[in-house]
Amino acid sequence: MGPVTHLAEDPEFQQTHFVVIDFEGTTPTGHSPEPIEVACLGLRHQPGQGPQPTEFRWESLMRPPAHAPVTPADTAQMGIRPDDVADRPPAGEVLARLDADLPGAPTLLVAHSAAVEAGFLYRYRQHCPRLAMLPVLDTIRMARLAHPGLPRYSLDTLIDHFGLPRPKQRHRAMGDVEVTALLFQRLLADLARTGAVTTLAALARQCARPPKAAEPEQLTFG
Image (cartoon, rainbow, N blue to C red; front, side, top):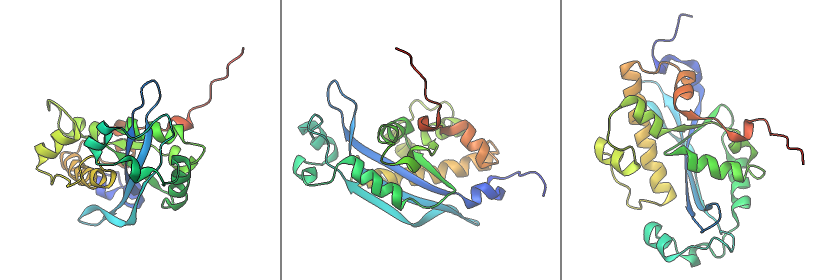
């Protein structure tokens, strides 16, 4: 077999189940953010079409800890009220279920501004060990590679730049996942067309955030 010259020809790319993921959360003063909603959507390559939605679609609200309640500002932005999450299971339980439901390998996560999603997964890594060990392709890094020079790379800016349909529920997890999946498809096509990326390994090397959970632990001596 000769060298791969087009991303769609890469067997690793063809076999990978891409899982677009998004969290919504609270940001308590003096504490780390806490997730209150998560959503995922699977994509797999189809010949001549690129990655297309699979049967994997998952979403859930979760109850934040007492120190990180849903505030009026959170409700104004996301539309999620304290009552919506009051009787929901906590994040550890939700993420353990998601981890168990995750499609089998090879799987690669996709997120916009992936540091947020990677941070939640790392903090809850004991509950979702499979998720926490996956690299996360960042659509911000992909957009910078495919379209250098844009003034901003926020999700709203890229939605407008590419004329993508704006979610009816922007800042809800599934709405943001669905538009991020469209953005991912568009950026993959742009990168493949220009030849900037010809293999999944090259894409991951340039645009993925490695899992912090895979890093060796630092020993400390007190």
